[in-house]
Image (cartoon, rainbow, N blue to C red; front, side):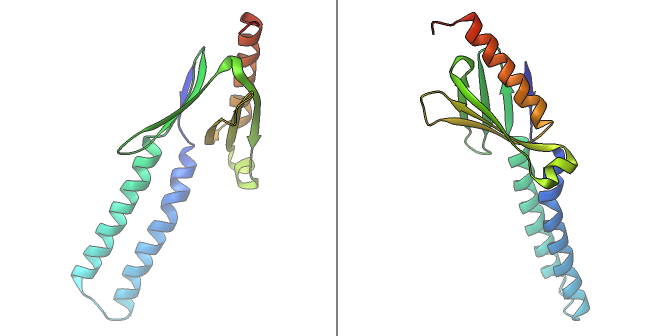
Length: 148
């Protein structure tokens, strides 16, 4: 039904401090008169590697709602998958921070009935709308298959 990723705003928010720190370190090198080109290159390379790690973590995270289950997948080298069948969903909660309310993103927490399992859709755009869709699908699944 849908396959989504975390909000692009989250990627920007995670990369911004890294950019500021790398720029600050380079500025301090130049301001202090310590103009060693290898230190600047090393700082830029370290920053680029950290930025690549942040981007890959963002890119390889996905959340999916199918006609049978909710799933989340994440991981760069090895992947981890979590899923809950729609007919065992007990609760769907939405967690939106103040910043999330302003920028329209939040976290949807899907809990399974009778189990201590949950699937989280972390920092997604339109979290309330996604939660409502999941609730509607789980109710439809319960109505269609009440004896399961």
